[in-house]
Image (cartoon, rainbow, N blue to C red; front, side, top):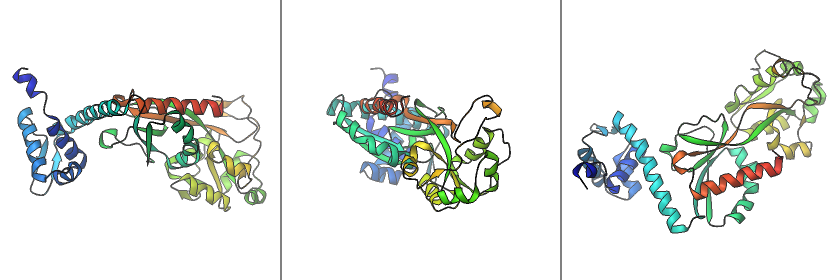
Length: 317
């Protein structure tokens, strides 16, 4: 191996120290992560900088921060180390075994995914699934996660997005609220309290626009999760716009009811279509997302394939 080749292949100990420090922005925290002393981390990183001939951190007396070069290098090294970890894990545990660290949306996870999980574990008994609640997209480079369930558009940077399913939303309320307000047309919803979910700030506007109504729907209470929004609707505080597949139990038991059963013809983009319910297809969808470097990892592939089959089986998609 030539001198140039050796310079381009730093030791794993150097890279692991750098990766830990880059993720935590602290040599002390990196030392705790790797069970080393702070001095050992500092020496490994300094040796790496000398070998590369580039300062990866900006240091002062109180803290350290990645340099611009360090930020770029950190993302690449984190992905490379993950590939090595996954390859080692697969070799040790077998081709269809290993751990899957999955970020899930809280309500999707608890109401739809976890109840179906026993079938996956039966199919892939060697895979262990660990769940982490995440309500907004994150940077895989800074998280020790293998995949995520994402609601939105297939535009996650540096990741492969696999379509899972569309989402149908419908306005629901308590039976008493519906009886009291007598909602018959989409326009009627402009005059009643509407319940909003903070992560779906434009959902009601999109629903109104599907019926050709361009007024903004800003009145009403706001909540940060589906569960609290649904409970507020049950309590008669207003009308909630919720995904139908997440409130099947409430609708079946009449704890919640469709706020408006029939709507007649739509206008706008859907002119000419008839829909006998107030249900509308969302402009966004659910995706299984994983970094490109882990797209072919055995646990990731097994879970992704199982998830797609589950949706096809239950919803005939």
